[in-house]
Image (cartoon, rainbow, N blue to C red; front, side):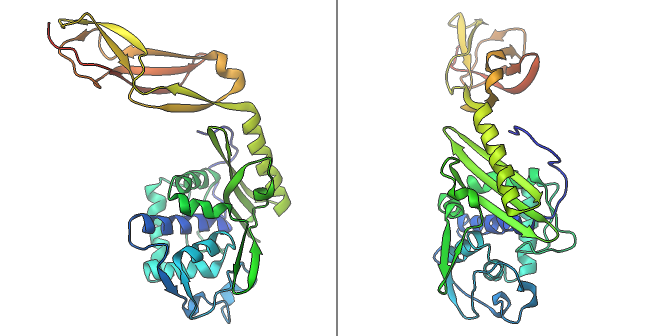
Amino acid sequence: QILTAGNEHQQRNPASLTKLMTGYVVDRAIDSHRITPDDIVTVGRDAWAKDNPVFVGSSLMFLKEGDRVSVRDLSRGLIVDSGNDACVALADYIAGGQRQFVEMMNNYAEKLHLKDTHFETVHGLDAPGQHSSAYDLAVLSRAIIHGEPEFYHMYSEKSLTWNGITQQNRNGLLWDKTMNVDGLKTGHTSGAGFNLIASAVDGQRRLIAVVMGADSAKGREEEARKLLRWGQQNFTTVQILHRGKKVGTERIWYGDKENIDLGTEQEFWMVLPKAEIPHIKAKYTLDGKELTAPISAHQRVGEIELYDRDKQVAHWPLVTLESVGEG
């Protein structure tokens, strides 16, 4: 559910926000039992920054060739340190190489319907043809949040020490105790500017803010903070549907009883503007003119429609809550 947006489908350089997809592919490999977080990876030469011009001046976990590191710790290096070397080590282990891993990234982008997105690298360093959008990255962030809880928890870690080097998470909003931010990721290259995706929990709500192309690290944090606070202050979460709760009763013909209860099989919450709540109304319509027995429970018989003033904002199937036999 989008609360506000501007140029949300504009294709931009994602920089290290690319690592969200890198992490997502790792998470999917764990979820499908292809690998485990405790698997040990031997770091290859292509993941060692020494004498590797690709990594000059970039963010690193500071791995060395021959290091033996768990998938879990490499994932933390990818997320907390934004380590380009960790990305390469994971790609080599999971897919046998960076090119094959990028193919997996693009396959998942297609599965998630990220129509503005194409990846060329596993780490997000500038590359021709690599692009994404604020909308796509918000969708990807939501998928990560709903993935493995242990994996998403890494996005809230504030620091990581590896090979005697301690680095701080570049997402400064993690230190703002008023925001309840628990992720996700920053990104920056000279071509991309300063990017940030931040997610915060507020009661029953989770908000995701995406900022791309800011002028500075401080600027991206301020913009994300403004978006999250605006959402927290002006919107509230309302439960619209209750599974199994009656929303209406209708006459049923030729049955062993005269009336049948109707409702929904879904639990559904919506984030709504606080000022609009008095104007939210729901109604239902039947698919046909009348209901006739026999009819089974959970059978679709119509549609529940939600309106904000005169505008329909959502709709769901209307189902029977009970069975009625022939009379």
